[in-house]
Image (cartoon, rainbow, N blue to C red):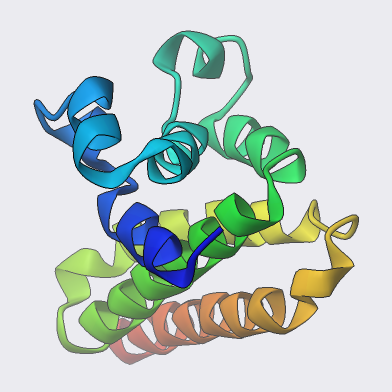
Amino acid sequence: MKLVDLYCAAYLHDTLEDTELTESEILCKFGADVLNLVKELTSDPIQMATFPSKGEYLLHKMQYMSPHALFIKLLDRLDNITDYKNDAMIDKSVLVAAKKYADQTQFMMNGLENRASYSTIIKLICATCKQINTIVIRMIDSDG
């Protein structure tokens, strides 16, 4: 796997879910390695419906991802949770969504103990989840 393929897959990871881009277009433009990673990172709504929650589905999926796909997934989650934290500090209307995302993320990180080689990224994600919960508590205290 080439580093450029990881970059491409990271950039394209949501395209099959969120755009009209097809698997064959990704294959043609970026190659099989990129396509395989993008497919591995794409949620399957039919399979997701068989789980009690989206968090449980994503945890299950992450427990069996290839190392490259999990690396991309964890960095994406860190980016998303950081955005929520930053938004929650300046916009109270984001608090509920930020807390829900942080709780779901924390649940998923707690279930990844079998992927110990990613412990540094997981610790960063968990610390950011904790920061969101601190922001929520401060906002509740300041309103009370």
